[in-house]
Length: 347
Image 1 (cartoon, helix red, strand yellow):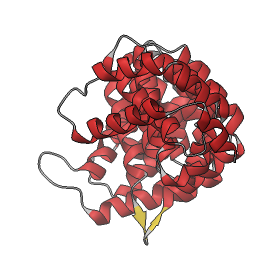
Image 2: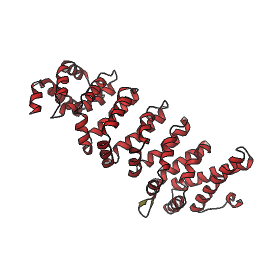
Image 3: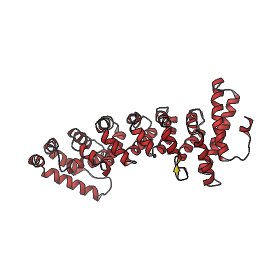
Image 4: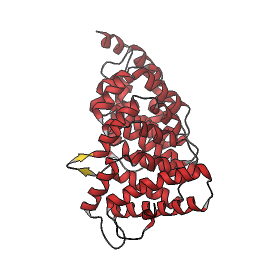
């Protein structure tokens, strides 16, 4: 094992192999005594190796990354399973090494070998790695940021996004986006958005199959009970999801629900303009629906005066011709609605 600690110019593949061996050594020494000098020396060498791996992938102040070196590193990383032990070792590393390891894992998601995203192929066969990243967000504040940093890149792979959507992991994000640490909650919100917007065919299929459960959770936990930050992010994301053409069937179903309309009307009454504006962009879909259900028409007519008065005072943060046009169309539609439209819609 003395060869692990020699200071010499090493090839990328060799550094990966030595890093893997050092992780194993550090774990075995910890079982004996977590504070013994031998283990501390191993951990110090491990942190240096991780720093070297990051420099190969990202370059440094003196040189840009070399594609051939990145290729060699990537091939060795996935030839023998090094990703899993590296992720597992993160809680035991010092802060700088944690940052470096996080960046390594994130960068490897983009590296190609013969035009193939090998990380995607690896994760498809090792989805338990994704479970560990999702569970890691529930750690303390400092560790959680490393797990979200890695997961943000992993969910760019369609196979990973599909797995999270269709597993129990998705449920956790309804809690993670509301964690008390703003930076962690922000990262979790970005991951949640990626899951629901990037891979359109996967999202459309998931929402069609899980409509009732998903929107019951979304409405209750994020739009009705959430904080200002949660409601604003959730209403904006919902608007983007519903207005995506690939989700047209889901959108029609959503805007045909009286319960959903009531939620939007409550958000329009929020004291903060940002939430009102996001709610407006969803509310206008209810109004634009050419086949409004009877109960939708009835509540719009019953609340016509209040709605028109609210919209008359609703202004965008900056001059926005598109918003003003949409608002005018919505107000005109509501102003001309009558209960006779119920019979017309039924014919």
